[in-house]
Image (cartoon, rainbow, N blue to C red; front, top):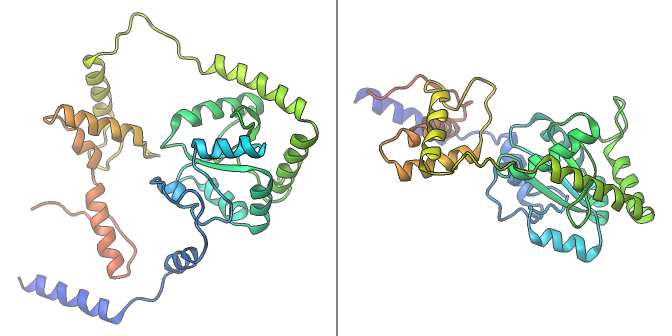
Amino acid sequence: MRFSSWLCGVIIVLLSIGCGQSEDEKEERDAMQKQANHLVDEKSPYLLQHLYNPVDWYPWDEVAFEKARREHKPIFLSIGYSTCHWCHVMARESFENEDVARILNRLFVSIKVDREERPDIDRVYMTYVQATTGGGGWPLSVWLTPELKPFFGGTYFPPEDKWGAPGFTNVLNRIAQAWQHDQARVSASADAALDFLRDATAVQQNEDVTLNASRFDEAYTRLAATYDAQHGGFGKAPKFPRPVVTYYLLHYHARTPGSHALEMVQGKRILILAQSVFASMICVTPTILPLRAE
């Protein structure tokens, strides 16, 4: 009781003193003064990180596709995820740059995709980039026709020519020129790429496998075998969040309440969130404390 009173007193004093405005708060304030793009209704943390970019981003939807068809513009597709280092680097160097944004907004329809939210889209266009460049990774940068056929791609592009790689601005201008003056060759390249993707991403039908409840249970068993009960997540580090796994486990929990599916989803996330909120109140860096229920 005495400890609780002391802790409450410390919190009140700290809150009354107030904390200096952090860099994150300043960035958030500045962002709110900017105009949001078409990602405003999205839920993905990665997409929302780009909400106030000067680039007029669209999510992957029919609105963006129809705009590309109507204006006869190529699509610039950028795929990444929230914990991707080079995604943040390219965002800072290019997507937050007003000059780059003007080129993208004038000559392209720009679409942002979270690979953790849409692994199906990522798989198709990553296959194309790996086949045409011999490598892959994120951020994934792909240029498409209004019919969504890829004709050029890569990963991270520096803002200017360096490290033996072309600068992003130069790439944009060259692609725009090719689209405007040599569209027949661009379209032929896109058609060939589409034929390749159809073969490379075709699902092989296995007539010996039947999708039933036992397959649903088998997937759960395999996930449970790799679950890290101590630190959360699946497998060994490095770990990346996979929303499709979370969705599956929540469905499995609803179907089989006696399983540990919900426990695997939650892991230590609730504890981490609670500690982060408390830490932000007293202006200290969040640290995972060795707490346990008594």
